[in-house]
Length: 304
Image: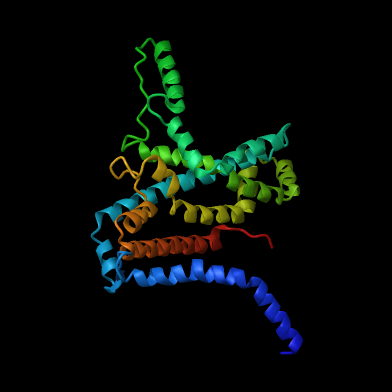
């Protein structure tokens, strides 16, 4: 290596050194430490004591662990499925050439910019069982239908966040508020589909639904796959909104995995056990991602 090359290398390293230091301090070290702590009995206040795989063995008999894991899988399955369907449907509608197209796109994307704390407070008001917007609309519509049918208007909306039956559906419904980001990605993919394919299909007599099923969805499959992976990662780490809105309740109906990790680490001070749970979550997300990647080889179609 010449003197000029060494000088250029030193200059480059000097410029990126803040990032390297930040990565090592805030990413690499915490990751390495959490792996070690997952094999320790560590309460933060006292030095860690190595206990081998005891923390991982305890998870098998921990009822809270299994409840939080079930809740997270349930939420991820429905919120991700509904989110993909709703965002794709809206993207197809927003891709139509209609007056005010840019305005409608902006309106659907703006909710994604609302901070999660403000969003949670807003939805707590919407889901309020006594004076909330959702129950007000439901009671007005259903009771009006009762009156038209000659029945007593006695319908009362559910206690969304205070009922073990309705708390989870409420959070799943709220998750649709953030479909703005995948909509933008779908719109970018829709712009890349050649118009000639739709024109040829229309000449051959294909209906609108057939054009969507045989052209739009196959051509968008890489984008759908990308949103699926991002959705898996995001839905399994859901924390802030349910923590603010329900705190994991009522009972443990909305106790998600990330909330359980947080409670163990920062309330019970069982940092070692929480680290073990965190690495189990990493393995679950990795396994689901690899599974989706395996299926993508069959169902995702890339242009050649």
